[in-house]
Image (tube, rainbow, N blue to C red):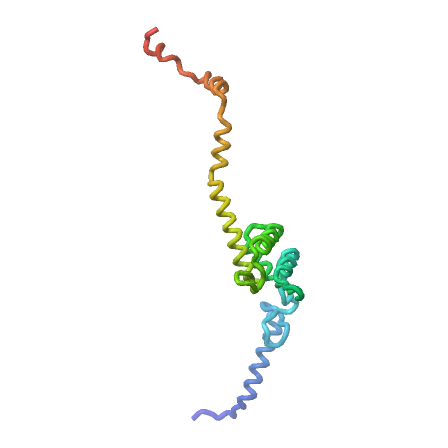
Length: 180
C-alpha cells in the first residue's frame, strides 16, 4: 500500500502557479518588460504611429467636402496617405490640380449623384483620373516615337558619310577582275 500524503488544496496550487509565472515574466531577459498587467504592449514604446503629412492636400480635401454654411471636416492623415498612394507618382501639386479639375471643370460636387459622399471616393476617382490621363499620353506618343525621331534626325550628311567611309573603301571591282 502506498503511503498517504495529505494533499494541498487546489486553490493553493493555482496561486503558486500564478506566482511562479509572474516571477518568470519579471526576470525573463528575452522579453521586454510589459507596460501593464496582462497586456502585450512593451514599456517605453510609443503607442501610435505617425504617417507622412500632406497638409495642402488635407486642406484642399476639407474645402472640397465643405458645404455652404458647414464647418470643415478634415480627413484623417491615413486617409490622405491612401489618397496620395492612389495618385501614384504624382506630387501634392498635381493632386490638388486634379481635385480642382474634378470640382470646377467636371462639376463633381459633394453629395451630388456622381460626387463624393465620403473621403474614400477620392481614392478611386483620383486613381482613375491619373490612369486615364497616362493612357491618353501613351496613345498620343507611342513608345519609341521620340527615340526614332531622334535617331532619324542624327543622320549624317552625305559628305560626312563619304569622308568616314573613304578609309575603308574596297578597291574598285575592275582592278580585282583584271580588266583595266
